[in-house]
Length: 571
Image (cartoon, rainbow, N blue to C red; front, side):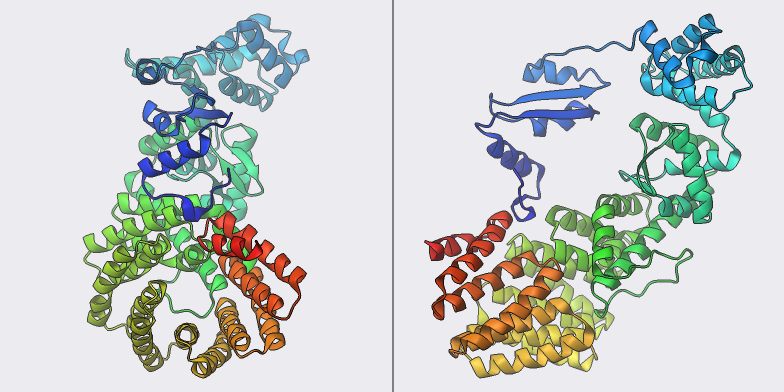
């Protein structure tokens, strides 16, 4: 059930429909863990009676019982004996068996909740000179303090909050501050770099504090330098920040974090596409990570994608409009290469709204132009053209010539996708002129490459080869490997049509290697398909079948319509 991103719709209703159609007639156990509300569950309920859904939650989710006929199974806390045994295992029998009554009282004060018991046990281990009775006095005082602040309708987590508070107040001041500042982060995982940016501290200091928090079970280390909260602890940390951190400090910490994400995304973008034009940024207050190559930058973007989308939303929510549009702008290369269509669309819609609210015409033009690419990937050609026709006069208004060339190029590309090659030729020639005048060598090379492809489609082989060769020279000079691969592919097709099979195969092999190196899977499939045709032409049917088989495997994974044509060729 590995659905390619190209098939994932952008609306929740459509996503739910696709999800249910995939599950139809399958026998699947679906586990939805730690659900917050009924609304989170309903889109994930399959329509087939062959599937079983198991939902875990601290809430009663009465709506699912009433409307969907769910069966509720209420799980109790650990029993007294189970809770006591858990404490004995963690702390050690030799120490706690001397105080059985205190041990039982500690388990009760923890509400027999495993998370609270684990945290309490770590507190005991960290104070070997204290008796359990000494620790109970502290915890009982904290429980009384929280009870005094509680209301009759407080939820059932009072016990665990008492243990959190007990442990939080025992932390060294700088580590306690780190804990509560982590509550300002709205993503799924927190890197040590982000923690350091929140606290405004050195990375080594942040790592030491995170290790302390992990040792006390206040955060969980999921991989090297990456941490996450239990959701109850996340809420508690955010509450601590609201209560104990001055408003100005919270605002400054959040802005430091969002600024770090922006500059880190920009550094990754430069590694993915070193020579393209980009938005100028202020000098960073904290150095972003350095990426040695394309793959390292790609891996960082993959790991941080959900955090970056959350950061974009957070920037918009707190009124940091500049950050809210610049962050998606810095992710342009990753989005165009990886094509996570939903995140691409959502992040740019947030950025567009933020730039318009701030009256930032440059930001609005950037978001519209980049958003058009997301619509194009979704085959929403009318929406893409609307974005570009709105962006083009904005670029002319702000006087950014290279960006005007970018918009003209994308209009030409859109006409090319619609098979209107004459219109594409006109806009691409305008884009080429503007990009040359602006000194945009990267853009010039890209435009020459697409012009070569359009001229090939029009049957003008000599002109196509000339444009592709000039594109290849410029792409080599700027290090644009994807552009180089496109130019080589076009040259391979030209050689093919001229009957120069060996020369065509050699160019296509070069294109294939570059496309594999840069994770351009759709381009890889198209080159494999072309290679299969050349192999068939020279009579090597086994080689042709193998190339087409590989192409078909990729196209089916991407759910691309060209799969049907390759399947027919194989047949």
